Length: 159
Image (cartoon, rainbow, N blue to C red; front, side):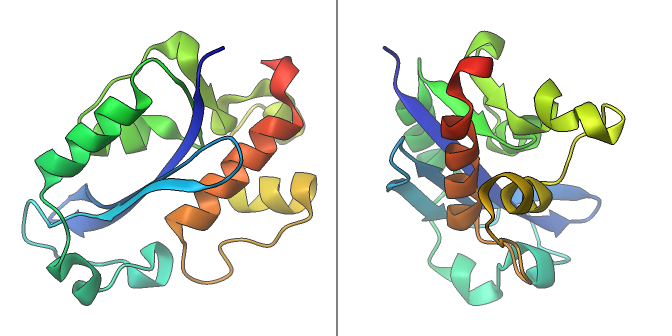
């Protein structure tokens, strides 16, 4: 049976693009197995702190992007990867993952059925399916990754 991890990333803005600021990965039990802040790879023009929870001091001691990217790549290699809108996280990490091993809650038909087929926000999924309030103010990649794993574990056979 393949390992299962849930991942969430927080981004900041550099010019007109998002860049990685933090990545968190949790295992099947919700235990954090990786939580890293990332040194900016470009000049930050907006920390988006009210959404990302990222502030300048978080990134001052961040790890180099390549180090974090390699840690993530080694950890998720061959596993089932759970998340919400994972394409953005993988793009920020400059990684790919086998489509057959991705469990993207934003694309899960059962969650989107009552929303005209459009993705439902993770915050809404957590509230509706877990009875949990998340993203009440700043986002926290650890909290979001745990919510993703819990949602997946609640419906593991429907994928």
